[in-house]
Image 1 (cartoon, helix red, strand yellow):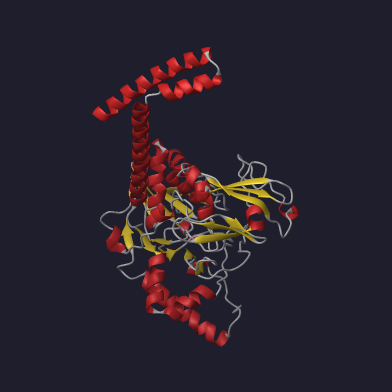
Image 2 (tube, helix red, strand yellow; image 1 turned 180 degrees about the vertical axis):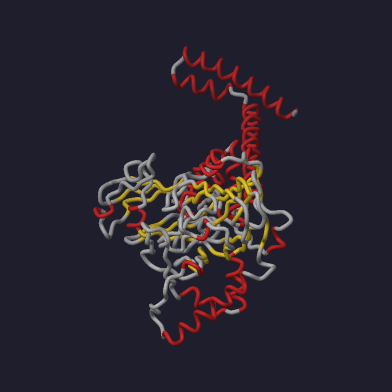
Length: 474
């Protein structure tokens, strides 16, 4: 505090000196004024001020980093993919040739970027719309062998003047580091997942308060990060009515419209000809395997039940897939390869099939990571196309693989059983979490909705990372 007060006193003193000097400037010519300023300024005072400002900036930056690290640890965001400050090497120079530009980083690695890629990726307002965030550059007018006229390393980034038309492009250092592809220097943005078995979540399942989610974007950030981390989350103290449940859904996004409607409010009356609208038991499954893109998330809120039974069950499909890969790798390959047709055709006016059938286990084509479990044995269509293999072998392998899959997901240690209660809504990732329900009697009323995965991911990124950080990955 004493250092701060001393710096504040010095700041006031410097202000008085500067004002006095400015008055002198107004009465003298420019050269005399400059000499007076140089001779009059209290250099120790200014050094103290600048030192204090530098210290303050460092503390603010450290506080920002601490907050970010705390946030990433608590919300499950991968801290190592959050954009960070990057600097180029002070001992080497940016260079270019007819093909590429070369950036030497302080970490001892040099990235190379093709000239045509850099020109096509120009971030200026005439090439990349500052509001819509859409590309404006005419990609097809860029010469194949474009080259820079000059490449200049500035404090904040790289400035390039292009030889063909004199256009100037500017690329921030952190943007160049983030999007380096020769070599790849940073991981793509991803959120951590915690794979679980029954005992991991039974006593302390992920949960947030309705008022927290409805009250702020930080509440939505906590909610969405828990959904991503565990694949599901409860929301407690939800008013027991459809209106407030729909408002809760809308904190993430609008409800997805399907042949079941948008926001549902249903009982076991077969209003739709689907087993979900009955009182019979439902085995573990994911919804919408018959859609080209299955629903991303599903929310369920029990409003009323005056009978017995109706317990719900969840299982982590990603955990089950890991176990399958460890115990029976050949079965894992089978369920990642063989495509399964599916349909929804219970209603007279509905006969839905996906544009292309998919395997049970779907992976990212670039990284190989598992991104989706797609399993509903009840909705499986007739399998009479065994593409790319020997049907004599594939038929037997398929049935052996799904038998092993079913055995894993129904192990007691995999199944998390609970009973939905009015006022406590459940939301889960339908691309990861398998769900089911025991048979029941009595009247049971449930409301809920589907949410598209892309809309959920958008809300999760923006609320957890902030718009500025999220946009760096575009």
